[in-house]
Length: 290
Ligand code: FAD
Image 1 (cartoon, rainbow, N blue to C red):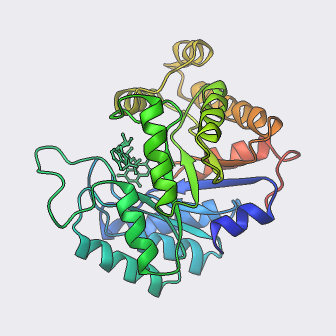
Image 2 (image 1 turned 90 degrees about the vertical axis):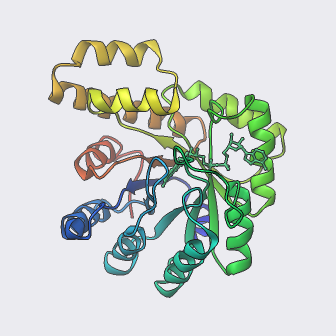
């Protein structure tokens, strides 16, 4: 099912995210994670592509496992900063063969110490989206940044680029993680003022260990509210307590979002079905997975 249709038919959706293994030998274990996540019946499951400027050989396999083996709609990420057009075309063909209809089209992080873009590369996610649109009948999503993309001159300039992305064929947006819902509400208001009308899916990251927090702040510079920092400081050395508090914090954010009319939430579950399951259990009377 196309994600845009799914968002139209269900009032509230909660989706999950997985990342593929680096090595083929780890696929069997990864398939178990897919099975456990699919058993939670999220609206769809997204599968990331590479990371930190890399490519991924197993995203299509994992998306196939999500959709064609476990029966949950898959959203395959695809980045273009580390691939030429030929590689992109090859992945598009593979996705089409597996009947994966949904793609989250991204530029990706620019790999260090390489010239970017080379003549056979797309500069921005919007160019990749134009190509995907020409390629065929895919439902295309993209990323957005409530606090502004780190490379952008300003939030306003970033929103102008986001508008270009939507005009290039982006049909829905998933946000970068945020830990203060007011940042999202402010972003939604500014996006509407720019006449960005596509559905925005709020990305929530349940933080369950200290290393994750260090990585998040180093990579995205996300604002960590005082309430969140107090939790981390208090439970930094008590792994199980931090996990419980991280699940509670994410649950709280999601309840506030739904209460305020943000009905589509994506949980960055990071291959942790137990964390996703705990959040969905906390929401059992608020969100019923089908
Ligand atoms: P773009 O939309 O191209 O934007 C990048 C920068 O260029 C922004 O500053 C933007 O303002 C600017 N820009 C855009 N268009 C123009 C234009 N026409 N003219 C001038 N400037 C422009 N990374 C991975 O490697 N794999 C993944 O699977 C992955 N999944 C992600 C999922 C989500 C929901 C999010 C939020 C991020 C994800 N990322 C992933 C990280 C992402 O690839 C990086 O944040 C990357 O730096 C930007 O990608 P983008 O698609 O947002 O780029």
